[in-house]
Length: 352
Image (spheres, rainbow, N blue to C red):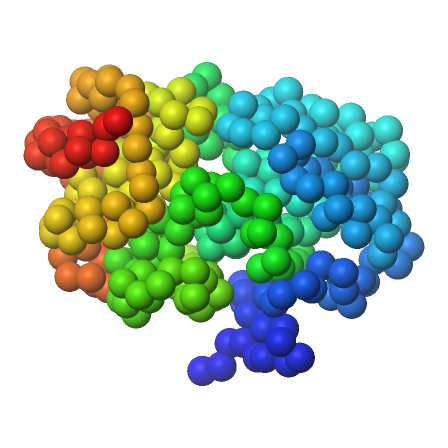
C-alpha cells in the first residue's frame, strides 16, 4: 500500500483517520514555500515559537502569509504550563481569531504540545499547523494529535487529542539545533526501531548524519501505523509509550529541566525494560546521554503511580522480547518495582 509520494524532492505522508486526516510534507528548504502547502488566504495567522528559534524562520513565514502576531515564549519544559497557555489565549482574543483562523507552532515538542492544547480549547478548536524544528518533534511529537501541558510536577497530565491540519517538516531547520537536542530526538527513532521497524537500528549502526532523513521518515511511518490503527490510544497505540513509563519518572526526578531531556529520559526508561540491555547501551552511548541527580526507586514509583496509564493496581507496560515485536503487558505494581530494581544498575552507568 502506498502512503506517500515523492515530487520535486518533497515527500507527502498522509495520516488517514476517521474524523480528521492531514498531510505531513517533508523536504529540504521547503519553509519558503509554505503558502503552497495550505490555503492561508483570508485567514489570520498567529505564530507561537520560543526564543531559541532563529528569527529568520518566522520572518520567512511572515513574508509569505498573513501573520498578525508572533508570540515568543521562553524555551524549555517550564513553558509547557498554564501560564503559557493563557498567553496564547490572550493573543487569540486580542486579535479576535475565529475558528477558521490559524495558529502555527514553530518549535520543538514543548511548543507543539502547548500550541496544540491551546488550539483545541480556544472556541472548542481552531486550525493548528505544526512546523517542528527539532529531531524529537519531527520524529514523534508533531504527529498523532497528542497535546498537553504539565501541572504540579506531573508531565502531560492535562491535555487533549487534537490533530493538526498540516505538518511541515523542513530538514534544514535542524541546522540551528544544538548537538544534545539533536541526539535527544533520535532516541525516539531508536524506540521506533525497537517496537516496529528494525531497519531503523541498522541505520543507527552506520553513520547517523548520513542517514538522518531516512531515519526520520521511517520513524514517521512507524508512528503513522500506530496512530491510524488507534487514534485515541485505547489499545495498540499504547505501544508508542515504550520507555515512557519509567522515562516520565526519570524526567520528573530531574525537575523537567536541562538535567535530563525527554528523549534521554525515554532512553533510560527503555533500558529499564529492555531484554538485551548491553545492545541498547551501545546505541545510547552513540547519543551521549548523561544525567547528574539521585534516582530513588521509591520516589520514582510514587511518580509512576500518578501516571495516566495506571489503572488501579496495574499499569500497561510496553515490552519488546524481539526487536520489532512489541506488546502490552498488564503489570502489577509489585512486578513494576521488581523490574525497576533490576534495571537501575544499568541506568546508573549514565550518571556523570
